[in-house]
Amino acid sequence: MPVDLFGANEQSAVEVDLDRWLDLARKVLADQGITEGAELSVLFVDEPTIAELNEQFLGKTGPTDVLSFPIEDDLDTSGRSPDQGGSGPGTEAMVEPQLLLGDVVICPTIAERNATDHGHDAAAETALLVVHGILHLLGFDHEVEAEAEVMEALERRLLTAHYDPTWAAAHPS
Image (cartoon, rainbow, N blue to C red; front, side):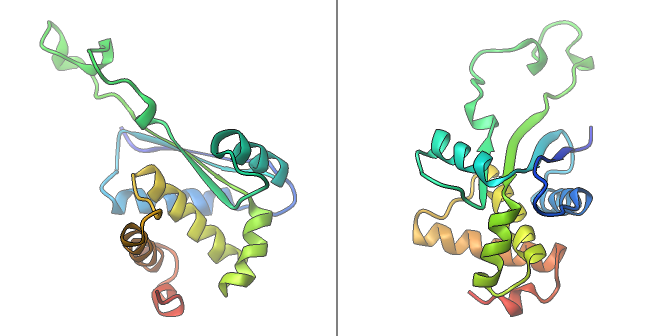
């Protein structure tokens, strides 16, 4: 079962090439060993929507550039659900359950504004946000300096490999 990627552009202020960003997401997931049996959504929203999500889920006021909402962490995997397999009759025909990674929510207007501050164009900023959001879903974080260094190094490597071969040279740590 391949990776299921879903994309939606729910804003109209900035043109978004969904296919481009879903392709990047697929490459990042494959690079991280996720090539099948997973589901991920990448959503592009306006400032009021991301501000509302930011306040509702993080308790922060105002819009932000990217939010990640992992799903698998919230699942209770204790016990046995019918689709989790087991030792009963007919289990050989059962299919592995889908890994529900979650949602990456990006605000393109914030990305455009931040791009200038980060020294690149809006597309490069969006690429960074796609990668950054996915890494959060995969368990990476940047709250502690050591973890931030690991996450940023991985972002540079992934962006160099799957977005722009000059990324690391243009964005040293």
